[in-house]
Image 1 (spheres, rainbow, N blue to C red):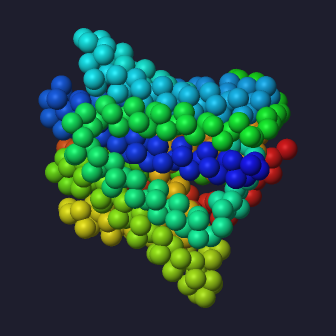
Image 2: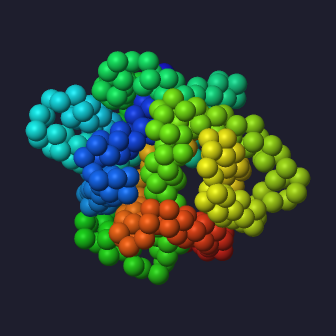
Image 3: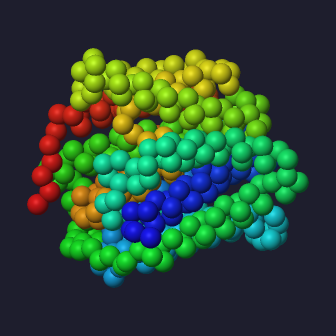
Length: 392
């Protein structure tokens, strides 16, 4: 098995697991806090603090784990996936009552392990940077459809299984560990990372890195809204139904596949292929439209519409835990700054939402956050198209 194919199989299995547990894990945490907190706003804020813990661990450990790749990247990948599996096992154990009255230790362990996964997991083999098609086009399309259907399958499973939440988390943990088997045929790779721990953070403020840092901050903020705040809001819209939530997510992702094909074709015809205007307009208006969404159909339509902003991106990118390293790139100082910027952007966005929630109503806090994200997303697209960065 060649490296590209082995990594492709590994990443498909891992993504299948993450599209199941990853999407629903924050919903599980929110529902848990809903039983202990006084009302929906308090439950969301407590879930947000858990999310912030994950991002803080990722930000603090990224410069350290980037230096570890000098001892072997495949080893770091294995440790990272193992940490993700441990995260879901701990969350499942907590919900099953294993920790007894110390349940919060299991939930905190989930957050710490998930943050460790994001800091450790790197894809440095550059096998799919210009497209994920290590398989033929038909096979890749089939895999995209399968991944897009995973949330629906998980939603149905959560309704049908008597031990749904706990068993799902354990199954996803098993799949993550199973995804390590193809890595046995991947040779070890060593990367250089010359910056020290404190030095990495100091470079965040350097003018020559303005593009990557600011763009990552904006993208991280949008990722926090899209993969954390929005799913919880959708869960409220669908009446706390796992099956409807899974169906909504899957239908949006499935519709995105032909929509992206259409957008790619007409972007070339209309000569918008390299223009920031159309992506910025679609991204910004999608966030504004989300303010008026009140039905599952509305969620499907606006999420499908938003995917048109970047027609070249694969549908599977939406199923990742907004994890940039999984896009496939060499590990260098540039990559580390990008990961740091993404984590810091998520921290700032969710912290702002929590602050707004303490002073405004939940609806006002969400509306303000979404409007801010619309402005940041449009500015990020425009800014990225105008700037150039040279990493020396």
